[in-house]
Image 1 (tube, rainbow, N blue to C red):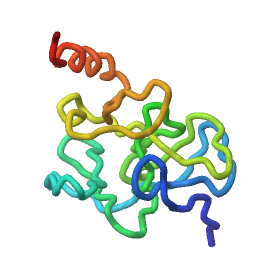
Image 2: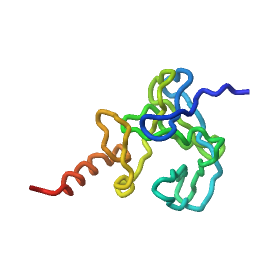
Image 3: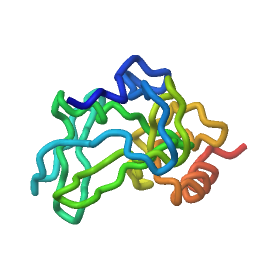
Length: 154
C-alpha cells in the first residue's frame, strides 16, 4: 500500500489546498491528477462552483472532479512550485515538482488560463509578482497591458 505524500487542508490562497507531507525533490512526481477521460467539454458552472477538468489534447478532457482525486485541490500560483504534466493515456496526468518542495508547503501550479478566462478569475496567490488574475505565465505581459489601457483616465 502506498503511503500518501500529500494532504488537503485549508489554504490561504483559496478553499482547500494540497500540501506536502514529505519533502519532494526537483522533477519528482508528487501526485496523479486522476479521473475519467471524456470528449464532452465541461459546462461552465456557477461562479462559486470550481471546475476540475483539464483539456489534455484537442477535444479530450480529463474530469478530475472525483473525490478520490486529492490533486484537484492544488491551487494556482503566479510563482508555482509544481507543474501539471499530461504523460499520455497510460501514465495520466501528474503534478511534478519544479524545485525542492519542503514538508508543509502548499503545492501549486499555473492553471494556464487564457486572457479571456483570466478576466473572470482573480488570483489570490500572494506571490510578489502576482498578476492579480489567474492567467498562463506567457500571457501575463498581455494582461498587464490590457489592464493598463482599460483603466479610467484622469
